[in-house]
Image (spheres, rainbow, N blue to C red):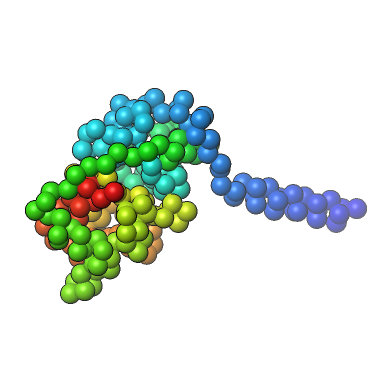
Length: 205
């Protein structure tokens, strides 16, 4: 009997662990009611008007969730977000991510003087620098790959994109995983390359 009890307890423990590991399903409708704190910087629909604050509308849910968890835990440092997510649990973050992912992102415009270089880098990379094309992870139209957690880029503010690429290059942002994919790629970019890519992405749609 004792062996049976032990076996049952062990099996329940394993089942409990498996249940806990399941991803939280986000509810967009519930998320809308939880985004009041986000609206001041990102706008209620996620289309930020400030060029230094990212547009969240249309961004992949998995990517949004990861970034919020990383910011909350301190793995990604965003001074403006310090403490902003402390009161939200996993379900809240999943709901918020689902809401913004369901919104339509606005489009921007690229600087004509930078389009050619930006397009070349985005679509073809730079063989001389050993830099791959951005399209492999972010798709030719900049929509990203939501299920894989690769972010939607098209229409994103150039100022924000430029800062993120610079932060990856300088090692100030490190939450791109053990493969260090973005840090490696950004490390091959000059200031002009970053400016051109950011501008091209802003006008991509």
